[in-house]
Length: 533
Image (cartoon, rainbow, N blue to C red):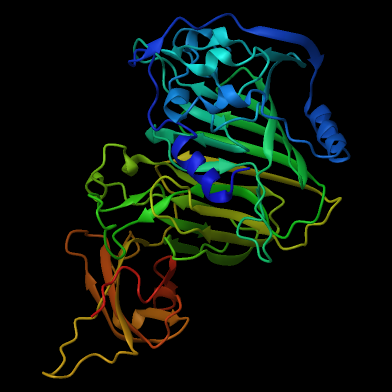
């Protein structure tokens, strides 16, 4: 069984291609596109799925076995990425149409089969696996896979804009993970159906329940409906996704969960992303890029008009942050830096989508939690954020939630200035000859850049900046207008501390009792990225 680090590397690096695969790519043999074979029709409805999920909870949990261990072990990442079903042979085909569905093949990294059904007129028919659906690389070991193994997942394709294989904009693949490329047409951040014991205490292992069965309806009126059955050691669940693509990718998610056993940390509407490093301290040693991340901060909106921005970090050990909230208006992981020059990489980090969660029901009282795992590369999704209900979650509970996911390059509007960059360094202090800095006193300079329509008409003063520290003291607060941003201000201050553990800082900007900017909450290690004096 994969541990968390291995699974995150699978999902971060291999779960989905970062560009749309094209049929004309080299090394792919034809023809593929064999007509789809179906099982017998059976009645299907949301109520029937709820009953099925409830019935499965009463049964012992038994994951689906690896159907072809030797053959699947030979289908590595590169080979798997080149096994494709032609769009013309997928579900709901049609020239130039949106919503054509093709399947992911099983492989070394995706070994648990899922069942996929087509729903029409209240009846569902299972799609039966056939090797002839796919086109394979030359000499692919997939030829040894039996004809009844099932699929790894599926993806949904855009309308064809040029001859070839249209790019995909939505994909379900691996455990309960799914992604959309959003309006910037670039995969990045992932969502998943449920987070269980992510970063939990007392040595409890994280659990990754699976979407084991899908029921897909043809896109009509610009909306595609997808149902899924979740199964895991601690929970079963019924999910419904109502997905629209244009002009924005928006998913309304309804789920009912049936708990098999107690859960310490139940993460609802979980988001998963990657943050390696940014301009906060310095580049990663030996890497040519200024920044590498799919998201750079957690944003939370409350219903009173306030906002919290928590820049992401790559900690030396697991980091946990919790933000108590009652009926949050929304939360999400954002990619604020949209400048190619910040990344200097053709994989388009500047186009990775934001993922914004709008709670609709079931989010009455709880907390938005952020878990940051250490990583030494870009190939591990090391960031998780989700909502955790305040009430304990016990075996036998039945919980229902409804929320909306927005995959977009834009952020939800707020009439507050945003923090667009923050950096850490050493204070520029001049010591007399022969006098050295105190060895037990760690000094850091903090630089925060803000931008927004709330700032241009304000003459910001140092006394308008309130800084609260977890430990240490603040000195020399300064403010200055941005050199290159007519809507911008820069806040600068020094932090002095004798502690060595991480320090949390809370920064608020206000003038005359009026809040000017989102509250910035950031955490840093006094030793992060800085060489010894």
